[in-house]
Image 1 (spheres, rainbow, N blue to C red):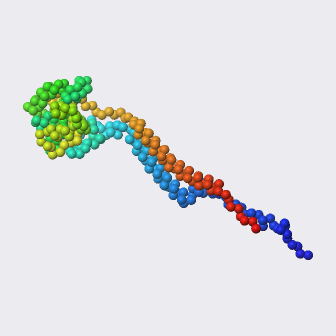
Image 2 (image 1 turned 135 degrees about the horizontal axis):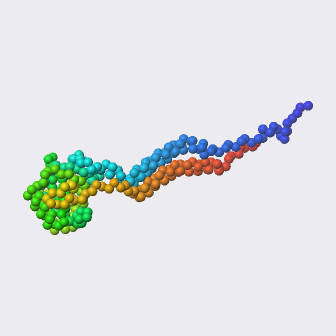
Image 3 (image 1 turned 30 degrees about the vertical axis):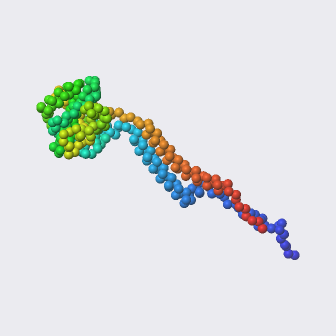
Length: 276
């Protein structure tokens, strides 16, 4: 007698549903070409932000880099600066030597100049011309009164000093907008002196020299070396921290996007296979 199988006695594997597909893990999603490319892009952006943060942090230290470059050793003026070109900040306060003939009739008196413990007074500024033809403003000395400064100019006109000077190189000051008509000037502005000198120079240095030694009974101008203290610019430190935060956010944004895709695929309904 033949044996027949009924539906109730069919093998179990015939009616077992197929296993549902497991959702991808975050690591699997992150390894997809699309998100690998996104990661490379986010890391490049983060590196750029980190570099900007490092640059901003270096800018927060004021004075250190400059003062390390400065020295009291005398160097020729023309080795640090060039006529008709702006003065580099690295040359500010350097001790220099200069050989120049003083031009008669081009002396200028500046008022309102403080000379340390001696108080307010007057500077006598000369027009020096180097052998190359370049002009340089030289602050020769300080006087307590305008009459004393004028008397010193008379002595300088009668007996010009030697043509070799040593002093401190400083950047030009901004022209003052007061009492020009009265002939009173308080700032040593090279651009203004050029218009006061009798002859237009072939070229002029962008700074001036404060002479260490004062001729014609003038007092030496107080010109100490620049401060070696290093100050911290807190605003630049804040900006540096901001750039670091932006760098971290670039990587976090990539992570957040990958996680969103993972959560979306995990919560998507799994299709069930059809049952005959």
